[in-house]
Image 1 (tube, rainbow, N blue to C red):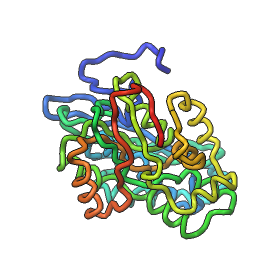
Image 2 (image 1 turned 120 degrees about the horizontal axis):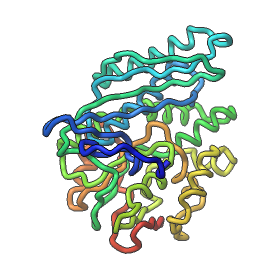
Image 3 (image 1 turned 90 degrees about the vertical axis):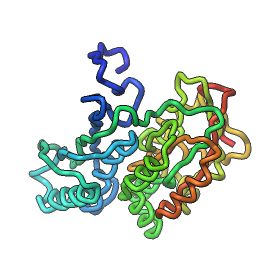
Amino acid sequence: MRDLPLIKDPNLLTGFEHAEDAGVYKISDDVALVQTLDFFTPTVDDPYTFGQIAATNALNDVYAMGGKPITAMNIVCFPIKTMDMAVLREVLRGGLDKMREAGVLLVGGHSVEDNEIKYGLSVTGTISPKKVWFNRGAKPGDSLILTKPLGTGIVSTAIKGGEADAELVAKAIACMTQLNKNAAQLLIAYGNIHACTDITGFGFLGHACEMIEGENVGLQIHSSAVPIFAGIKELVESGYVPAGLYRNKNYRIAQIEKKDTCPDWILDVLFDPQTAGGLFFSIASAEAQSLIEKLHQDGIADAAIVGKVVSENPGKIVVY
């Protein structure tokens, strides 16, 4: 994709060339558009919940740039000949409820007949051109914070295999349907975020690699500090691991140095493809603990300092 002859425009503040969560296009000195699109097949059995998860996943891309989503369009693929239309209604209802929670207006969409149901959103938001969060810009000495636990891809695989514990499923669904709206608003008010992304399909370490790719910094991650759903260890050791985890691991493992203090199963979880994962960002270390306390007070209970940005080993991640 990177060898495509892209259209250049000085008002395009970022596109997909740096694997950002959304594109940002400057309209004026004060306003830029934030645009993203995401859709996928069901990760859970309940259609209403699936609609919520898919909408949350798309809306969160705008929050990851520091923007405010304002409008959305539905993207639907549906097997109309083999599936009851009531299923589609519930999917759309779930998505609409999340748009309502985000303060987003549904303005249209498009549907096609397909053999497998798929759903998601195209989302447009706004932001000041001077206040965009990019996934690069982390500074040596910064602390790294993650706002949600990892393991949703593994849980989804266990659900398909009929082996997921009901309590674990409930926790994972609560995570996947939680907008990053409150976390982003708190970060905006706090200010001084140096780099930010959200953890989705490339897994924690995949998105962390994007944060330092081509940069003069590296990362140190403390595996014991990373929030992970209880019960994930047993699922990994039982083989309930999505194929995407192995793809992520194979693609990025050359940039990773694992120390003996990091268990093998946790390293696998760090590559697990997430759906509607948390924000992952860098901030000056002197401000990190007070921000964690504010996040916890705001109900983002799993937020944790998981590592730091270092000047040594640029482009590499050491996992302790």
